[in-house]
Image (tube, rainbow, N blue to C red; front, top):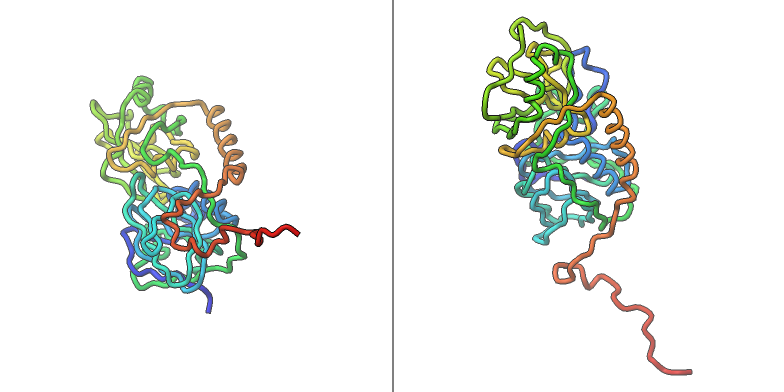
Length: 336
């Protein structure tokens, strides 16, 4: 029997996600996939495998898990409290999990979406070429206690590796470019967009997040007569009340609300990971600047394996300390 990950307890929003779908917008299917695709790449780097594999996305809290065979895991995305048979585990790192050991992943300490990656990935059935869950489109369902997820064949590799802690889990600056309907807004409103201090509203999910701010709203000229047309993740729609919404990976594919700007792809994970109440700033840049940023980000992700470092473990917390060969090369001390 192939290895499986047993879900003993499931937090809210627990789902299988990969890079999602491409090429189906015309059929009404938005890209979907991981809310924080950068975390997928980080997990793949930690385990030395392709970033196309599927992982578990945990929204706000993880759950309790047990593997039916020895396996390797990596923990990325929003840092969460994690223990293996009661021993704390480091986040943004890879670990080895013995058969039957209980992995507990608690609440997010910052951010929203955490990820549990497994050596070989989650080998659930593909739908339209992806293993991702897209609830709005009716593809897949949330994971629940009692589920047992099949794991792919893990060719093996090193564990006990760590990546530097990312800084995208507490809000911050989001770089934006003009959208197709930016000219429906006054130039002063576009300038005010960059001057305004926003916070992430309580209302938000994989479809998108609402931004709160003090002062007047943002209103488009003839906003109520805008035709519905294609929208993409990162677009900032403005509703009739003047509130901006940043569309997420599971957004609709068309919309009639005017779009004042678009968050660039490199910064969309920061927007999706911002917890309720987190401060957010919008910074308008040119398209040429955005292209340069995207190229630099792609190069940084390609070089990510160079950032791997071994975990420095505390001997007091190593339950398997006696399994290590702490002394070698010892002789009787006799001189021949």
